Image (cartoon, rainbow, N blue to C red):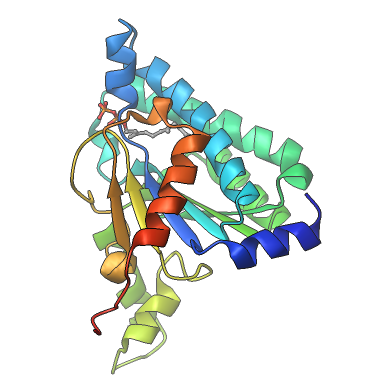
Length: 236
Ligand code: FPP
């Protein structure tokens, strides 16, 4: 797709920023008698497909909840497997950055990752910084942690009278428009500490489908569903 077509699709697409809680990898694997890591591997492939498809349909920014501040509590074997997938994915990103047209931004405190992964994250952010399609990957991310991070940033700036705009400028998603729709797979009806600040007026979309079963048709269904929502932002 050339730039002109992308711009046309972007203007026509009502959904400017969509966010995904990619839940259900573990159950998907269990149903197949496989270890949870097998589900994450498929989940990573589905993530890549959905991330590219969101670009095709004209979505301006897509955010994916990959690993939360709480996910470190999982068994070491599972955490290590997710870190390996992440490391491989970052290598793929570096190789394919020109094809993607995606600007990768990592939401969350990078300090906790190994130096090798951290370095790759910074490289991918730097290499993709001029691309127009924003892809936020929430890694070591927590919504409450993010609000505290923004508050500390403002204190460091010497701010004493903090406004909503100040916080919006200091959260990790500051490069993205407001979140229009949060999609959660896996059947649970909760937000799980995801985009707490940004979800104030976001539409919510829950599906029982497990993340590895999520398809591009489901993205079409999300866009169609969003078109039916009447957004009032507290007005009439
Ligand atoms: C939630 O499913 C999923 C996660 C905590 C990890 C998400 C990771 C991926 C999609 C793969 C890694 C992606 C990249 C980009 C490297 P769950 O394990 O909680 O599933 P369950 O609710 O069925 O147990």
